[in-house]
Image (tube, rainbow, N blue to C red):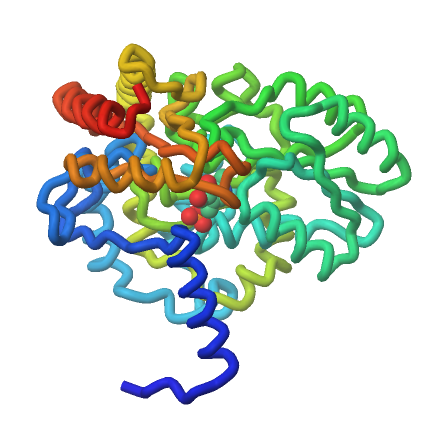
Length: 403
Ligand SMILES: Cc1ncc(COP(=O)(O)O)c(C=O)c1O
């Protein structure tokens, strides 16, 4: 073990850590010694109901998904051992990419080690200094960083439009009339709000301006539409969105990985030029095999999506009956607004003491005064799990004089 030498950097990070603690925003990691499921074993606490994972379809610990990962390990070994174009690409990657494209309804797909990686790769690879990219104000951090990277690498113009305000987008596209490519990006489901993009309205503006639409469907894949095929299916618009990025780290087995889905030419161009394709190893084969199995389970058992939707609707309604103010919506993300950050953190601590694991979010992750605990439902939750969680909400709500 090395002892850190006294340095400016050490002093700076220690001061930063002290500030996080005194501001009440220091994050403590909870250690779990069981697979992700409706309930997990948390070190020091025992069994808790988990209401804060992205395991929307309950596939993280599904026997077929786990077995496929093991088979992947046996068949392909532990590592990819280099970059795809240098030492070869496993057949399981090709199968997974065909399955991703089939699921979201595009011509092709290309996997990355995470959707974060995909979101950074896409704009920085396809845009030039003659182009512009416009992003919804509430888009995920990976898209924000993707724009920053694209701007610094390609010198493209970047801009932000007000959340869900397509008149603002319209005006910004008007002003960008001279740009060769106009790319518009939005989350399909906004992760802190649980709201769904108004895809028909967004598409209409994009079409009118001959702009390309890119949706990040990370919280919509496996969740929206009767087959879990995402935002486009929800609106009956499969095939209409030009570019989709999504994650394999949430509904689709929850391990890791992401993909860009779009035309074969765009995916080929990314294979040729995207730096996270050219300079880093591919997704581990075990992870690819598990994600592949997760897609197969989803396609075979779309009723999981219906169960997820029922759970979310029922839980949201019951929270309201208890006197809480969950944000309205149709997704399994159910944020309960509490106001101050300290209130959200306190509520999350008390819920954990009651055996319910749900995370509190405050400023700057969400706007000042809109701190919340964000519940995320899963198809793995039974009514019994949710009844118990609601009983804890009731007790904690009363203890904090919230209801
Ligand atoms: C909207 C959105 N995009 C991208 C990501 C990143 O996904 P990954 O974990 O695959 O990097 C997330 C994860 O939180 C997300 O919510």
